[in-house]
Picture 1 (cartoon, rainbow, N blue to C red):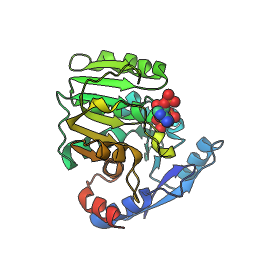
Picture 2: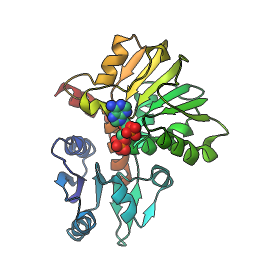
Picture 3: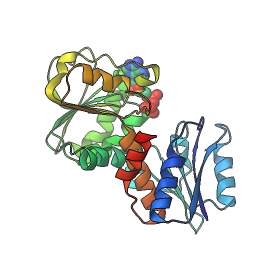
Picture 4: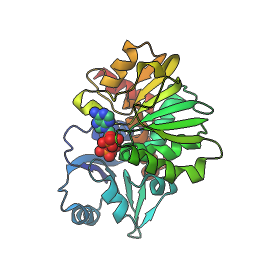
Length: 276
Ligand code: ATR
């Protein structure tokens, strides 16, 4: 049995073991996958112990994504862009490879599962923390016409614009804007990448930004009830609204593919998660 894990702190609510076990059953892969709570002060040491114990790879979640980036011997281009790693591959030659599948998870859920068009669209991104940095590259690769990043701390949005503009400015106008200055311009797609939902709140965006054709996507998910942002969109008559459970499953599927070379059926896993 090849061994894998998701590491975080805390980790007890992670759905990743359930998702990867369903993938493994479906694709008949001889592997086991567990959740491990690591000590924030001992991350590097504990990862070395996992390698020593024969683990083939790990998924990395809060608060270790930046630390995982730092310990990787080599990084994929999307991990470099993201400044964070959610998938580590422990290679046979002893090297640690780092990748980030969050952005591809988001765009695949949008495009493949929900048939959302990103190309030529006007997108508003709420938040400018690690979660947003992690997905901007794959999002911009879809060539939207405009991406506006808004954040309470506007400097963080400015930094993201500075980082991503050079590579993507030929196809996409990238700008930052404070919540107060958003005005009433309608967006085709509003993506919530803030952690406001953890407190059951919604960032202070004016209702006017939402047109009758606007789609809202919350990168957070809640399996038991609607997220605050999904509820906000529903109350204001958005065309469609989604939470990030599909993104979670798709980022897991991409990690599974990196490790095992086989793509699991995500639709089946998503519907079984929603049912349970
Ligand atoms: P993550 O890695 O999840 O992105 P983070 O780096 O702490 O975590 O970023 C959290 C994001 O949510 C930030 O953009 C934060 O805004 P600030 O940078 O101004 O702090 C945003 N955020 C958190 N709570 C929020 C709230 N109640 N309203 C608006 N934005 C919020």
